[in-house]
Amino acid sequence: MTELKGALIGCGFFAINQMHAWRDVEGAYIVAICDRDPERLKTVGDQFGIERRYSDAEAMFADGGFDFVDIATTVESHRALVEMAARNRVPAICQKPFAKTLSDAKAMVEACRKAGVALMVHENFRWQTPIQAVRKALETGAIGTPFWGRFSFRSGYDVFSGQPYLAEGERFIIEDLGIHTLDIARYILGDVSALTARTRRVNPRIRGEDVATILLDHENGATSVVDVSYATKLSKEPFPETLMELDGSEGTIRLTQGYRLEVNNAQGTTIADVSPKLLSWASRPWHNIQESVYAIQQHWVDQLRRGAEHSTSGADNLKTFALVEAAYDSAAQGKTIDVGAML
Ligand code: NAD
Ligand code: 89V
Image 1 (tube, rainbow, N blue to C red):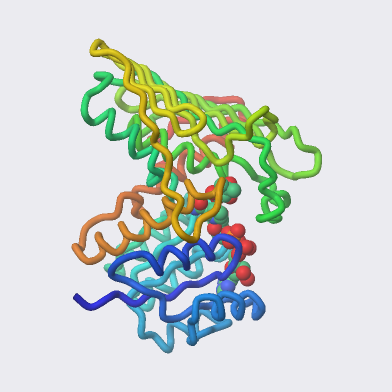
Image 2: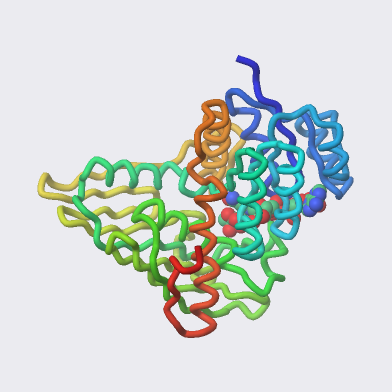
């Protein structure tokens, strides 16, 4: 079968992972790259041996010769680039956060739907090996019907050195990291009908909130808490692990630090090591995220070939993105937000 050709826009901090993963993915490879920063374009082009290099995305689309585009820029350019892909009838992957606002995100989904092209948000956290292991345990009925959950990411890791823009935005942890945790909560316990949130900023050197506690009412009646913090100094730094607690009618699941999965039910307790693989190009502690980048990009290719919907399609991601907006609204107004009414 002929391999799909891809083009990548945005050769920054995280795109290096995406470029490595494209080398490993079966059925696709990158033929062109674009960045308005000439130094970054040269670094990535030289490192990955890509000859076709552009400083302007319009020029790259005009030359064509690729089957999909992977948009790895920061959020400000996502809407313009996704709409450019739609105009050129090119299927697109867009990094998270999908957009600046839910109305932009809805317009991007609509543009791709009208153009008849696939759109997937690079929401990779649900593809992490430990998260997949929890989902599998639930699907086998190991704890019966889950009625309560906690999805927790608490860290003191310095994310600002790699991603300085994270210190500058009015919004920080919910938009950047909580978005993943909220997506995991949806993936594990289903869609959300209402949300209540509280936020605060502990680190005085950043602009946005670095702590958030969010209560979710799931449509199936389950209740969960999503708690995220970059102001939590622990003796053993857990970055970038998402920890999980699930209580069900027949048992419990605990995903604890060090990728330890404990399932407890009437048959007893099983403990498994659900550590991610350390891919050849990966490095600790990022290997968990890096493996999920490979997994989501392989999923993109497999589903594109089948003509099937992606797990984190643009339409699916509207439901995660709505939770981000609802969390900021709830924290600002001190009110519970009806999420269904936003979609
Ligand atoms: P970055 O600032 O390091 O890189 C972005 C690059 O895009 C820059 O080189 C910039 O010059 C280029 N760019 C921006 N707009 C452009 C345009 N219109 N045309 C051409 N080039 C353009 O940012 P980053 O840290 O790599 O983050 C990129 C995205 O990835 C963000 O949305 C971030 O939230 C996301 N991210 C995701 C994960 C994850 O696990 N999914 C992890 C880290 C970052
Ligand atoms: O996934 C992300 O978007 C990253 C990080 C894990 C560092 O928060 O910004």
